[in-house]
Image (cartoon, rainbow, N blue to C red):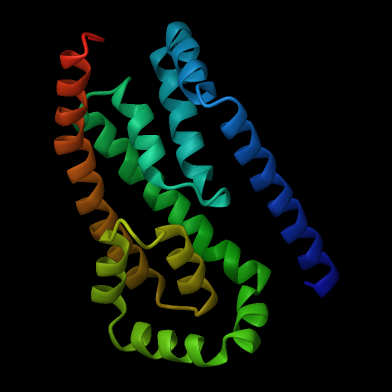
Length: 192
């Protein structure tokens, strides 16, 4: 793929992210209202829309937490957990291969040579445990880790296993413990 084509794809991707973020900021209830109206038509259609939004989330770099909060309104915790793990698997895989397709390492490596070499050394020595640890951290954006691992060509199976375990732990805490706390707060303020 030529540099010109890659540049066009990156620009289109950035425009998509910008439009999505602006719409989300201008209409914060958009996802909630869309899902409510979709569920009124069909539960299966609602699940499909939820899965589609979750799987494409990596293009926007929005955290999975937003999807979890939206899902708490519509799904039981076990169902939400399964749906979230599916979306984490698909969105992480998309980010991993999308970064390779765009050759992001060509633009990252020259600018941040020392940092890339340090990270590459650590990721190649401690692939699975380091990826699982970083992806379980609520501080570091997992989608960025997916792009980095894809551009560094980290072993896919070690990468995706680490992501699923790390994100699975964090998402389970958010969904099961956070969901209970969320329901308690809603009951306390008489919204349920």
